[in-house]
Length: 151
Image (cartoon, rainbow, N blue to C red; front, side, top):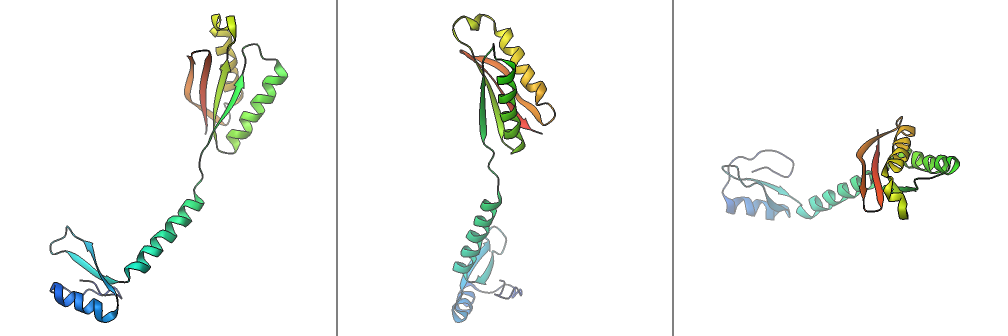
């Protein structure tokens, strides 16, 4: 048994331990039930639960959730449009988010997936300084997708 101030009281009968906790106006909490004999502690259980919840709230506030942002391209994209979209992808990566590069095919463009793959590889090459490829480019229906993560 462990006292409220942290001192070890040794092996004590359950009835006596409960009475001691009751006299102090605290709870008797089983800390290590698998130990032989089980370890119990005298503490204010409500206060303990409140402190645990408070620590969880602080930890949640500090965590950063990584989002998946998407940038869409076309196989015959112009240079200026390509640069603008790649600049957006660069900004997303700098913010610490993942970027999904989607290349959309229309009509007969699907007959030449190598043109789309060239655009996707050009994006990866432009962003190679701050991103690595998580999922390589693959064709799914009429779209080719690739996922980039910040380094």
